[in-house]
Image 1 (cartoon, helix red, strand yellow):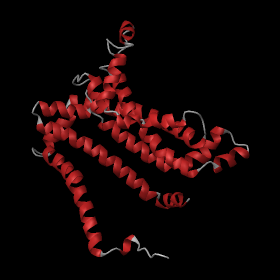
Image 2 (image 1 turned 90 degrees about the horizontal axis):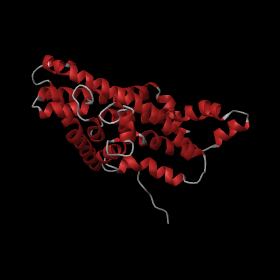
Image 3 (image 1 turned 180 degrees about the vertical axis):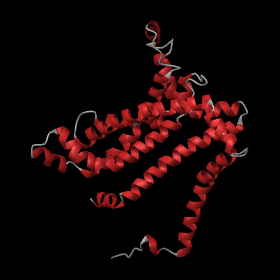
Image 4 (image 1 turned 90 degrees about the vertical axis):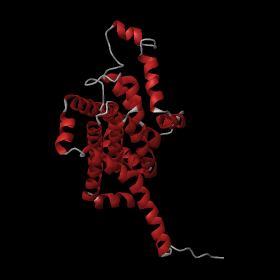
Length: 283
């Protein structure tokens, strides 16, 4: 007995309107409205006041530190993500499932707990703290600690985006290239990398946005030293706790702008290379 199923686009108009209204309303209420309030509060005393808060030395120091931490963490996570995804998707080996589980670990561990882990490892009462202090090496309350926790909380993003993509693509093209005499590195550059470049771009943008916005883990290891170890999210908290609401919302708006720039860049590239993206999806 055969059954006739309607396409989703053939559902009643009322149902489509209700579902669309719910989706748009949810996005507007929980995403667009809070972001609009941030920009409204940032400009409450005029553009000049908001700009003055952003170019204030401590704010600039926080911006530079956030960008520097992301500039170090994101490339390292990209290299790890590509290597891990390539190993998981293209090879069979003992401990493969365990590696996938470890990659997912930061998704289930609170960022604050991640920060505490590094305190236990590198703190004065930790495993390596006294030895590091003897050699005047500073991990906590300095850039290295901030970079380490940023790497921890963001390293799943590239790998988790690339693993299903590379598994879906299979191994046929790589095996064909190797059978024709290509080296492993040449196969990666000429076959694997072109096939994953759009997924890789999306993963890098997502990883970068997460790195810039990280708060909990960085708060634990940074020491909240104003002008030295405060990243942008920490600086927002400091300004807000000091009742500098214009400054807090101005810096928060800057964070929002960075996120919007990331989204705009992704959308621009998708629009510019729409035909190539569609061909890749068909493949």
